[in-house]
Structures are given as C-alpha cells and as structure tokens.
Image (cartoon, rainbow, N blue to C red; front, side):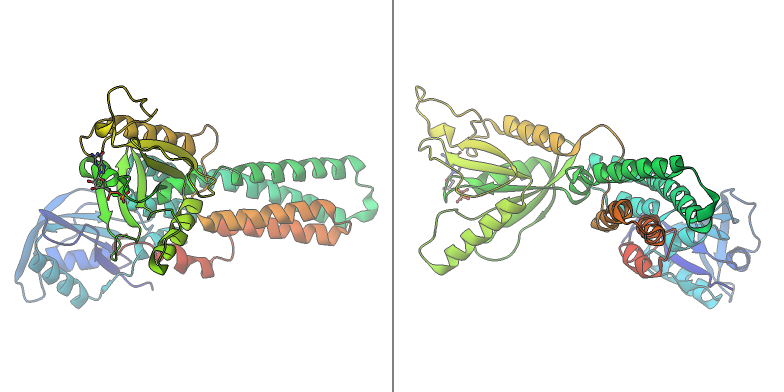
Length: 432
Ligand code: GDP
C-alpha cells in the first residue's frame, strides 16, 4: 500500500491560511481521527482538529477528496489551517503521529502522473505555472498544463505507431504481395512527420525564451551610462534584482518584467580592450554575453557618437543614444534618444524592448516546446525518422521507427521514464 503523504501546499511564512494537503489511501481515516468524522466528499466543512490527546490544534476548513477524481488520483484531503507556524507544526506532528509522512518535492504531481492524471509535459506546465513571473510565462505554462504540447506529441506518437505496425506487417508478410502503394504511402508519411517535427524544433527557441526570460545584454564603452540606464529600467518595473557580487567590471544582472515579458538585463562591462588583465577579462565576458543575448542594447554617448558595437552577435541590436540632456538643442538626435539622468526617452526605450521581445516570442501556430529536454528528444526522433527513410532493410527501418517513437514517448512520459522522473519532479516545490 502506498504511503499517505502530507505537505503544506501554500507558501511558507506567516499567512492568513495555510493549505495542508494529504494524499494516499489513509487520507480519509486520518481526517476522521483529526476531526471526528469524514466530511462529505468535496464539501468544505468547518471542523475542530484535535490530536490523539484531545488537544485542540485549530479550527479549520477541511475537504475530503476521494479518488480517482482527485489531483493525484488517490484519496486526498485538504486542511485550510490558520497560517501560523505553530499551527502548521502542530498539525504536521499530529499527521505524522497518525502514520502519514512528509511529502518529497513534486511527490503529489508525481503520483498524479503515475496514476495517469496528466502526462509529463502537463506536469512540467504545472511547475512552470508555479514559477511564472510574467504574463507570457503564465499563458505558456497554462497552455502546456492543459495539454497543448501533450496532444501534439501524442498525435505524433500515434502516427509513428501506425507506421511501425505497417512496417512490421511488411516484415511478417513479405510474400503476401502487400501493394507497392503501401511502401510509397509510408515513405510520404515518414517524410511529412519528420518535416513537422523539424518545423516544431525550428521555432526560434521562443518557448524556451519565454520560460527562461529574454536575455538583454546592455553593452557599450565605459561611462556611456549602461548601469544608470538599467537602474532606470529597473526602478519602476522591478520584479527581482540579483546583483552579482564583485567589482563594477562584473556583469550586473537585473530581472524585470516589461510588457508581460520576463527579461534579464545584464550590464556588460566596457567593450574596449582593457589595459589591465581584470578589465580584459571583463571584455572577454562581455563578448560572451553578447553572443548569448537575445537582444543587445548598444548604448553610446549621444554627445560623442561612436561607431560600432565591437562584438559579434546574432541578437537583435537596438542602438540607444544616452545623455541627450547634454546635447545642444541644434545637434542631431539619435533615433532612440534617452537620458538616464532625466528619464527622458525611457518610455520609448521600454516600448522598443517590448516590441523586440514580442517579435522574438510571439508566433502563430502550434505551441512551442519549452525545455532542452524536449528539444534533444525530438531531435533524436527526427534523426531516427530520417534514418528510417534511407535504410533498405525492413528490420532496421522498424528499429528506427521504434527509436523515434521511444524518443517522443520520453517527452510525454509514455515510455521508459524512470530515469526522467527524478529530473522532472526534482524541479517542483514541496507540496506540489
Ligand atoms: P557605464 O560605465 O556605461 O555603466 O556608465 P554609468 O552608468 O556608470 O554612467 C557613467 C557616468 O555618466 C556617471 O557619472 C553617470 O552619472 C553619468 N550619466 C549616465 N547617464 C547619464 C545621462 O543620461 N546624462 C548625464 N548627464 N549623465 C549621465
């Protein structure tokens, strides 16, 4: 019999309410021990919770959620406790005394997966939804949680299964004179499927970009106002700032949500070849950031315009002329003219960042993949499908088709998943 597990499902710290969640075959029995009787299924009931000595622990809203229609598919319960630490600990102690054990990270969702309540991509969608900071991340995670990716991949798996069945028929009944038409139709289908998956892979990494946040490198020579600009951008839109410790020559990172898109702004050190080695190291790093960036804000001093970015990048490059407060009224103004000192032009800079961000992540069509895990497995599937089209021997072709199906099955969790589960559910927080 499976363990009955429990964990606070709401955040730690002081709060009005803490939701303590239970799952496992003894949930109902434990509920009865705590509050005298099991409340009617799925009906919120106010109860006094008592430990084995009869001491009252809390006055709480309790829910009994019988399987298989619960989150995990098992018998579940929820205790909506007062959110204080002492209440939480007393109830946790009482639950442990009644034979339940604390859940591990992701264990509730893992059970839901093992009970067929959701596939692995939906489980990942739940983890992403909990972690979402921006509207774009929330939308993408919700779609994935609702099965958008799972359905796409299940469709491909079904088509591969059909191909494999036909291929095996060709192996088993070589003399049956299966029509040449069948082999031709299979070749067409393999080509089509490989092209579809390849097109899905060739999505400009938009799903991964949404999930991880866009990487914006703020680059330019020393003293043009890079860090002042980042401070300006962050001061109003700040979500999370993580300043990497170290000298001013180290990149400083700030996470912001602009126009519903999560972005990490990195102040890259001066791009000039430095005289001393520390600065040279800063320059080397700046070049590495610029290569990694989705967007480069190439900042220059508008009073002393200066040619060239000085780095190679595949990113969208946005030229930003700073310090326009110092510009004489007759001087030509940069296309994107800002002043980190006065705040002028900051709205236009934000708008430009959002517009470029949108162009990188928004697209019509099927939902994008969101993880390297998906990308590598689907790449293997395409390679196997391509190989299946070139091999002459029927058995080897069947082998390649099986490999392709296996690769997609790993993404959804339909096949051989033990090794994948720890990696997927390790990302979760306790109580999910
Ligand atoms: P970084 O080396 O590119 O990060 O440049 P900083 O942000 O450290 O700025 C260098 C100097 O320029 C500082 O003294 C800032 O106060 C000043 N500065 C930055 N932006 C502006 C601006 O828009 N106008 C004026 N007048 N000074 C600025």
